[in-house]
Image 1 (cartoon, rainbow, N blue to C red):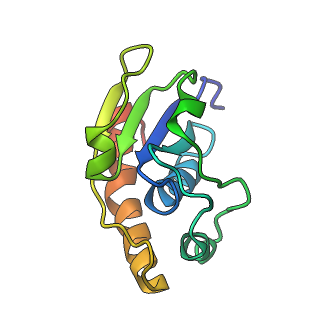
Image 2 (image 1 turned 60 degrees about the horizontal axis):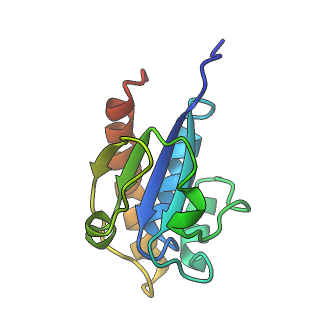
Amino acid sequence: MHTEKPHTVLVLCTGNSCRSQMAEALLQDAFAGRVRALSAGTHPQPAVAPQAILALQQLGLPTAQLQPKDIASVMTEDIDLVVTVCDNAQESCPVFPRRTARLHMSFPDPHGQALEAFVSVRDAIRDRLVPAVRTALGLQE
């Protein structure tokens, strides 16, 4: 029985409408109960891209909780790991109230492209980012 407090991972992007939202859902699913995944943007869009929602739903992942959030809305969270998924977010990543581990892994922005581009980015996040977060947090498979 796993009783430890879950690690909190913040996935940060610019618009918080595609990559970071998919990463949030994928991390939440991959580490159910062991990681609390959040996402936010430095300049959030008004809504999550419909193709990002579809790409996640193809895997049977829940999407109802996904919504763009500004980085300011999560600054008071007790974050264990900040993951930037775009170069712009890495450059403008804020300083957090306490020292926080960081991981940068850039993925192409599928915004405005066909569903196939979102699926490709989703799969890249699942194949590359999920194992990197596992390693960064020292989690067992």
